[in-house]
Image (tube, rainbow, N blue to C red; front, side, top):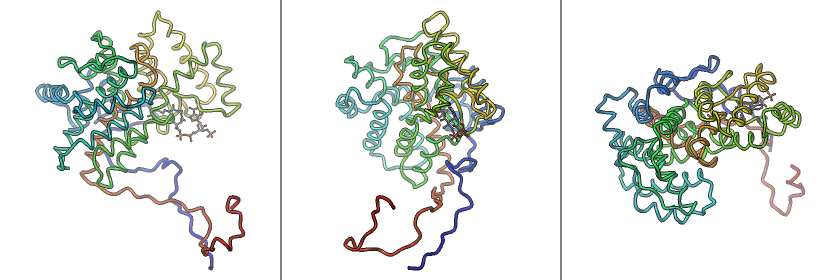
Length: 391
Ligand code: CMC
């Protein structure tokens, strides 16, 4: 068969870098200046003054709630926190050593099977977004306690979202400062423009699949160490480094051996320090003061100095994951729950983006630049001489 050279696609961009995949009014980033806004409000102001519940409303409704609307949303969260009764036996049957992100993915998928409502309208999907956001912390806390041989703790009706999560994890009410710390962490992670997991949620949603499936896609994507999974990896890395005096040698060796990326550094969009890292750094500095973790904090500070000298000119700076683990550790949370916390917050962003995208839905279906063999004829197996493993 005559072979025709197939044309290369001039629009190819590896990893879709620089490609604008959707229009959105939710979140904007200035990667050069290190600025992040939800609906025009800076992340610094939101972290200082807002609450996770208020940010959820902002993302879902694209405006701040009135006092009574905020009260109503908080009430709805409280009403929705308890899990459907069919979920508990599933959590009990899961292997105790299962990775929590995999558990969250499975349980989120189960919620879809339990939802018998066929209505796919805006109001029904907003209600699903509220329920998933309310229930993810309950699922994670229940799994965490059961795997440790403890009984799950029922949600506390008079605690806000962040405080209730800490309460369900530990069984005791957090202090005001601890609750605020978790609230800020959830605000910082609630949305982040067209990140990989939001994009995969939108790809799933664009086929007119359902909101749960879109969120499950997001969870699966967030799990990877180049995305949400980096926060857990950072703590492993700084534990392995052990002391600030060893940072320089560690970074030098990593670069020399091209072993792996320095976790908690680098970002596709930010070419300076991620503003969320700045906020986390100050909270981390306060919570580690006078504790053993001060040593780990100092490793991070030194890593920032060494990385700036080595690769600052390439725009590789601290990202959100560098200091978040130290904050979670101070709250008594084990490393394998760090990425689930990211998901517990980001479900607000995923659902908000899907709800927005569905208003003017268009199927995502990009091209691939074909680099394989030219067209050729089928060869029956008995006539094949070629060793295909070497083709
Ligand atoms: N350590 C060392 N080198 C790095 C790093 C890093 N963390 N990040 C990027 N580089 C280098 C990379 O080796 C490459 O160098 P060269 O041009 O010489 O080959 C250059 O920077 C560009 O890298 P890239 O992989 O093309 O850039 P990207 O935009 O695809 O990468 C990233 C973004 C986040 C995947 C990457 O920076 C990385 O792997 N970071 C470590 C993992 C991490 O912390 N992820 C969390 C991201 S923030 C939370 C979230 O929202 O997901």
